[in-house]
Length: 254
Image 1 (cartoon, one colour):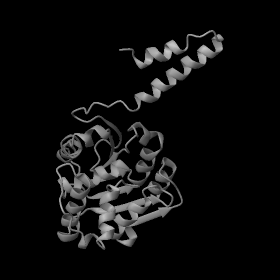
Image 2 (tube, rainbow, N blue to C red; image 1 turned 120 degrees about the vertical axis):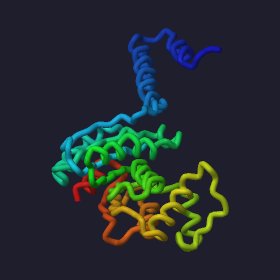
Image 3 (cartoon, rainbow, N blue to C red; image 1 turned 45 degrees about the vertical axis):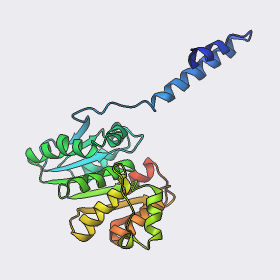
Image 4 (cartoon, rainbow, N blue to C red; image 1 turned 60 degrees about the horizontal axis):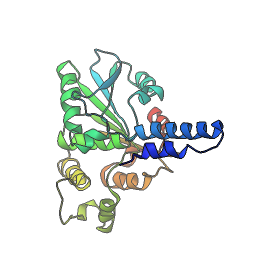
């Protein structure tokens, strides 16, 4: 069978100028580079981290990245610098818990075993988790699976569940009236909201939560529903902005 790459290169073999051929080669090269972003990444054990702050601090700030983000972006986008100013005596750790850990359902376990437990055994007394987009979902999943382990979470434009499930809740008249017909093994959205309803609302066992979101963010509607069902008015921040780093950075500084 002829490969797609070979066919593309064969298509360049026509009596045109070298300039045209070079344009085709450049296009192929850029396409290859872009495709690398979609290749699955290994789910390393222990999870890889990027650390900063005070090594022996008794407070730990854990950063969880979004779906297409790398841990280095927390440094590039000045999140470490902001955190060092807000919590000068804290340890800072960005955990490379990318999409692969969510797909194989090991995200919460890796966060717990590779970061939270070692931190507590080394003297950490308070843990704050900062989750952006998918990382916000990760913070919520972790608190559902390991309740009582973290003291505070800062959620920036968090992904809080699938749209179909969110529409069900609105149609039922709110989370209190919502009774899903069935919850499959892989139905993380319904499991998450049922778990939060039980732990946070019924048992009153939840950390301090602050949610920030841009008013033009594509997740704004779902975030407003989440705030309505789970948070207090003072636990939300809204500013003009979209689903991007400048908005998240401004929210994080507030």
